[in-house]
Image (cartoon, rainbow, N blue to C red; front, side):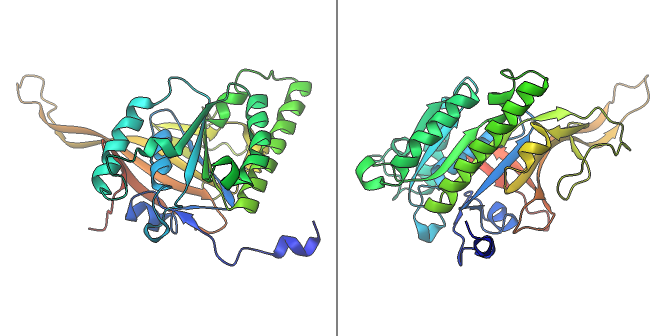
Length: 301
């Protein structure tokens, strides 16, 4: 690669819709192709929900901001979310009755593969390299690759010693290099999910390196950090953080001798934040998870 090639950028970036106009507007059009987008969150925040939804929206035609293509879902944690996948099938069939007719099963355009180790993922990506470049021959017209989750692959196979840390970093860069190559050469959107770990610093700690727009990440009343550390942060193009907080509304009665307890409503509030992205400013958007999908909340209405 020549130095001047680093300055060359695609004249037009294609985006994959999330199936919600509010979330698409928040992300500048959706999930960009030609790059790696990471979804960071604790368990239960919605990162897998968004990933599964993208498997269907990628099948939408270009005029509906889809990719008009198939998807590859590489999962590393059990159980496989088959029940949720079936729910989304019915949802997208009802919202797009012509495209998702009863005779056309959207699941036929979703390829799945279990990866148990980082080396297993690397082997799959190397095998894809030749097959993705010939979609007509292999019938693998894939424009979206989802890896759920990247942290699980590195969680148990590496110890905290110099040798294993060096081997882990080497795999980081090998995997990200292949993913970025697939994204750039074939115009593929890459989506990864990552987990979080609790921060051991106090609220005013400053020993850790700040990565992105947010000085601190909070979810469920805890200060957290993305898993896999700084080395992995340099392997992705965009990082989105999904948080979850309990919101208490109403007035609680403080009188112990009264049978009236007041009105208390406890709800989960979920938000998605832009930690860093080359095409997006720092911002956040509330979203909800329903049976028929993940949708943004317009707080200005």
